[in-house]
Length: 253
Image 1 (tube, helix red, strand yellow):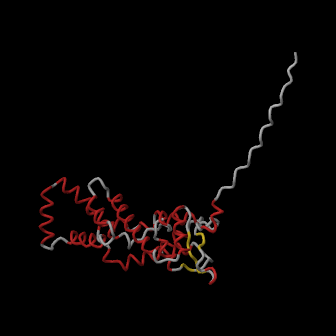
Image 2 (cartoon, helix red, strand yellow):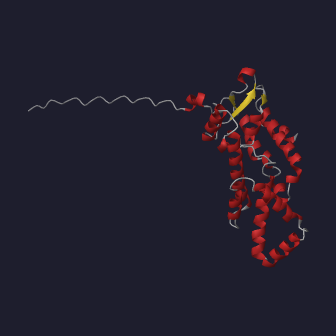
Image 3 (cartoon, helix red, strand yellow):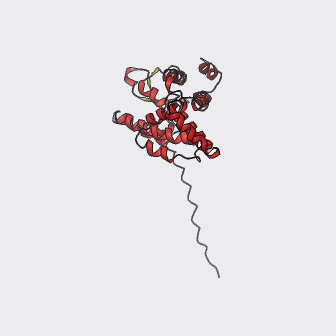
């Protein structure tokens, strides 16, 4: 696939990771803002699988990702993940934020348009508005989402509104995930969240080490794991040598 081919042209693994996080995972975002893509979740999940495979390819020789590691790829770094956006997870947030932003601005330009829109929607003849209502219903299954959506206004641009929606949604999903994990994995999550520039990924290298977190990129980075926190501490600064005390000067008369 093009993702693997283009990322292979980068010599540095860190550069490949930056391309995945900042470019490849956002390639279809403009389409998701224009049309509702939640109806094609299977296609979006295939795209997400390609992103995960590209990240997994960066750990050559370290085994395959566990199910938990695959989930952590799409979790933001501030919550303990790698930060590669999931196209399937953001589908409703993209469309809803884009539609509402356009709605507020068009309503300010032509107030009569609002009335005609709602009349058409009530008759079931406005497919984009029906898709908006469906996206809102799915988003509101997240606790606190309804209150957040009511606060969105014309001052919230699409990217800003999308960010607010996804932050709340992902925070709730990660909280639910942590409640199902053993204490050790929860500790790794929390430690990774405290240091977003470090990534902790599980790799099935051997049976005895399959649950141990390993660094993602570059391989020389320390793992965001409490057992290796010593690598993150700065070495104490050398003590300065005390200046020699001033010698008393004998007074002569």
